[in-house]
Image 1 (cartoon, rainbow, N blue to C red):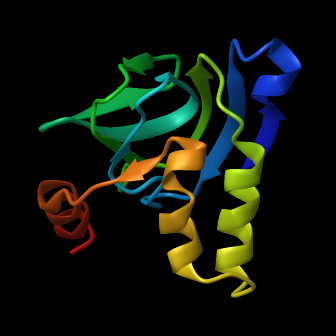
Image 2 (cartoon, helix red, strand yellow; image 1 turned 180 degrees about the vertical axis):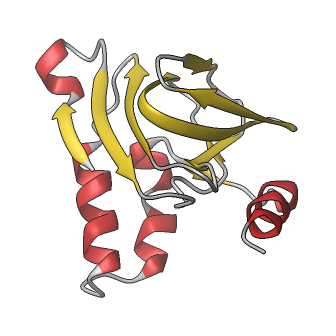
Length: 140
């Protein structure tokens, strides 16, 4: 993950990051945002995206906009890695959120800190069994 532009640098118009995933890697778990729409641009590879009840594949050069309050998740397809650009519009301060994820991955922070920060970073996690069933079925 490479943080590109945070909201404070654009007058809160947009915040952006680049994410690179290995073949079949999970990206973000099912969640929604209340204050921003989210743009996904696939620079390389293929991205699998859940948008509400639909699961779609977006190939290199393709893009998808997820409107605010729409439950979504993403990951690289089973046969491809992916390099994507994500933009939140209007921008939300996100760098602190991704730094928290890194601290959790290094076991320097507890997972419950992520739940406590959902409102601050406008990232609200939800249960979406159909997403996980699809992802697990593709790994067999």
